[in-house]
Amino acid sequence: MAHRLPNAGDYGLLLLLSAIWGSSFVFIKVGVDEVPPVTMTAIRLGLAALFLLFVMAVTKRSFPAGKGVWWMLLACAITGNALPFSLIAWGQQVIPPGTAAILMGVMPLLTMVLAHVFTVDDKLNARKVKGMVIGLLGLCVLVGHTALYGLTADLLAMLALLTAAASYGFNAVLIRRMQAPDKVAAVTMIISLSAVMLVPFAFMLEDPLAVDAGVTAWSAIVTLGVLHASIATLVMFAIIGRAGASFFSQINLLVPIAGVLWAALLFSEIPGPNALVALGLIILGILIARGGLALGSTAAIAEKGALRP
Picture 1 (cartoon, rainbow, N blue to C red):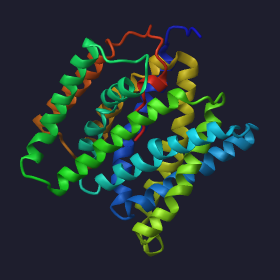
Picture 2 (picture 1 turned 90 degrees about the vertical axis):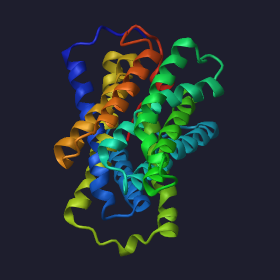
Picture 3 (picture 1 turned 30 degrees about the horizontal axis):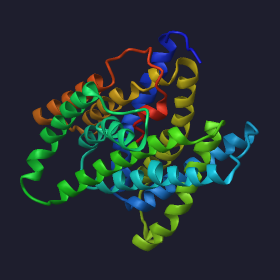
Picture 4 (picture 1 turned 120 degrees about the vertical axis):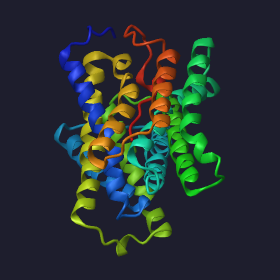
């Protein structure tokens, strides 16, 4: 379906969503300082599921049907929510929010590699490879100095975030194959399945009943569930419906920048020269790989992947 040219309202919504998703790294850091990562993620997704199930009830939507669709929803729940959300929270016990935002910025580049392996019509070309090399050079600038000291806690946390980014990339490839006419209903089921599957892991790996967190931490977790994981998802679909998936894919350039700005504003985390160079190289790599900011592409958001921390 052809979309009109984006207007000021579309750009306003895109910037708003970038600010929301970019701030999630700060909220995760606040929450995980007092609540263990898997427990926090289970609660966050549980709250998001309840909110979206309420939206489904009010709008009288139906659950997705078909065994094949449900198997795909389960796979997307693991790769798009349960695994990456938990890894990000675990990594941010050590990694500050601004650095986490930059690390997660490589997700679109990893998606291109996975799409090349698992699809037949989205292969790498010279332009994509050039962008990937530049983006990965930025990653080396950010991670390289840490790797020089061996397998430290910082390096393990960075690897956890990079694994989360790869999981998001694989999820993008899966979503591309999923046949679900009602995307809101599909996302509601994905988030609900993610929450359910994380509860036993929270009790196996942590002690949720022993958590003694303060109001600030709980407020951050509630915000992550209701605002970042559910309301922001509805805003995402509104943007795609108004201006198209190709326009929306620019979110991948804006979220890391927003994350760095929020970290500087709320955590006084001023990025060092290596972080700024890394951020610039990663964004440049994404721009080159996707052919600039042209909005005429027919690529779907499932092909691009969206950074949803």
